[in-house]
Length: 234
Image 1 (cartoon, rainbow, N blue to C red):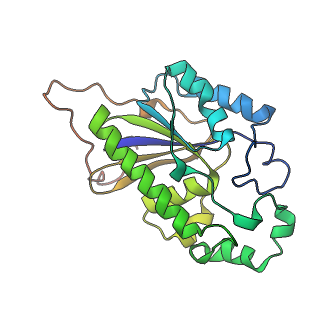
Image 2: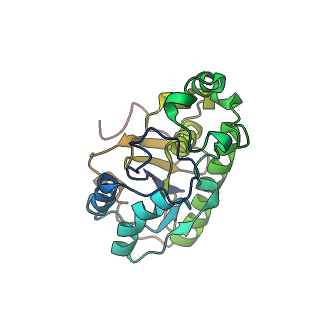
Image 3: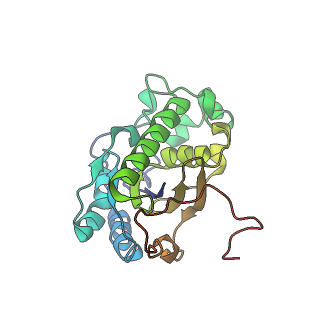
């Protein structure tokens, strides 16, 4: 139905300070993160991006700003792609939080983890997946079934969306790695998603460029069938 590029924000000041930033306002990209944001423009050159959807967190807005300027796009702010509400854990030292009993639950049984005064990881996954699928359907209707769009959000949010796309339980999402400024790619079809990339930092992105449409009255939707025997690129 569409191709989604999941972009994690660039490196922030909190990423290098050992602090759980969460929804703390004003957390900005550091110098490395700003450089990563600039490189996204070059990396995705040639990939037609119909829309940019963005978490309301400042570090995400700063990450997509160079790309949005280059493409002449205005990012759509999506509150449901915001960082996890870590409640009273927000702003805490990761070293200190790792000694809490809840830390083991987050690591081993995240679907049961609910942050004190905040939200549960299962609730986060539900809101994020719902938002992604709603935008996918909307963008397909507005831009066609071959449309490529980008969503900039946070590590745990991306891991949760990928777990859903992989049809794996949320309790397995800690096995997925999502580095700052990495892209992951999901092709959404009418019946199921296909995960094309995970935590890609420097791979060739030419495969994200949709093929030139054949002469037909209506663009063809992406097939929901998997390739028997593996990818045709093998």
